[in-house]
Image (cartoon, rainbow over the protein chains, first blue to last red):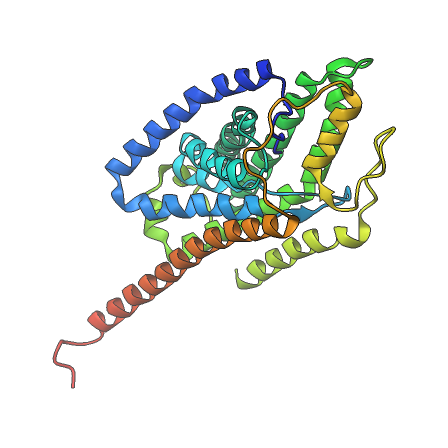
Amino acid sequence: MHIMEGFLPPAHALGWAAASLPFLAFGLHSVKRSLQAHPERRMLLGVAAAFAFLLSALKLPSVTGSCSHPTGVGFGALLFGPAAMVPVGFVVLLFQALLLAHGGLTTLGANVFSMAIVGPFVAYGVFRAAAGVGASRSVAVFLAACLGDLATYVVTSIQLAWAFPDAVGGFGASFVKFAGIFGLTQVPIAISEGLLTVLVVNAMARFNAHELRALPVMMAGRKSA
Amino acid sequence: MKTRTWMTWAVIVLLTVLPLWFASAPPAEPGAEAPAMFGGADERAQQAIGTVAPDYAPWFEPLFEPASGEIASLLFALQAAIGAGVIGYWLGTSVARERARRESATSSTQSEPHAD
């Protein structure tokens, strides 16, 4: 989902940065407030960040013959709420843009919007919806992480199609093209991310039950383990 | 629970490994050579931009680029190692704390302080 450095026209690059900035400010505020109220959650926030760090470094092969990577931001969104993952995703993307020439500074706003904003918010929304209709925690966590991951790549496709509409087919044709590259590649990887997130949450439930109970988000989906 | 955990791991591994045999080759963009098998989706998107908007030229270059593919994979491995290290530390302390809690719970209910 990394749009390469310089590969968005300046107006788009600026626009996405402007769209992401308020989320980033709100996210920082929300993390600060949460850690002030619960300093003991610092470790867990580090773990959520580490999960995103780890997963977004793994480029996995997919059925389309391309490689792509999971995002890992759904897990943290379920623990701390989606806003908290905006600064976390921002740090991951900044690291990759500066040191790895993966993504870029001019496209940072667009990449933050897809991976650090839409991904966590979709994951959170899906979790609440699934828990609301009575899905078990494992099912809700799986759907949340999986669909949050996919949503990120759909947004990247929209961003590119918007910036580069097809000469004949316009936005639609261009979106189909980019979604064919990103979306299809991502399907098995998103499923893997969903399963992996379930495993981590289950490990938490086993070894860290009291910490998990203190997190309001997870409690919404506590029908059965 | 235990078997379900192992089954889940197995599915993740299969989802990752099976494409190595069953993936179809990525289609070539018109006018460009066929993309390498298992190249990055990001690079394919970059090629696709080239065919949709052939006149587009990137207007900014990365400030720093890893000197080679090896250096890049070193940095990616470093990123993954940092993440895995933090998760491993947390999981280790959690397991140890949970075990200590359970042991102190059983020993305090077992007998009076002056046991032997």
